[in-house]
Image (cartoon, rainbow, N blue to C red; front, side, top):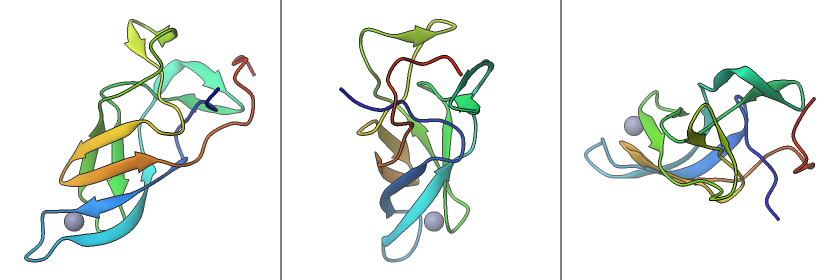
Length: 99
Ligand SMILES: [Zn+2]
């Protein structure tokens, strides 16, 4: 089981939009306004992870068996791509969702 990831959770990866790729951490910046998981907005495919440098990545992988508003829910291990490429590494400890 993977904990669900929300706005403010952390992603670790590499930003390639520099002369030399930079390793860094970033924060999930967007989520689904109608769904909160552990007091923060649940994030889903298409949401943005902002690297420490300010470059974004887009969440592209999710739990296959759960979705919000038609988009798969982000979780620990979700992949994001773009300038900032990496994996979400934090989430809420409970997979039951809700509040
Ligand atoms: Zn960057």
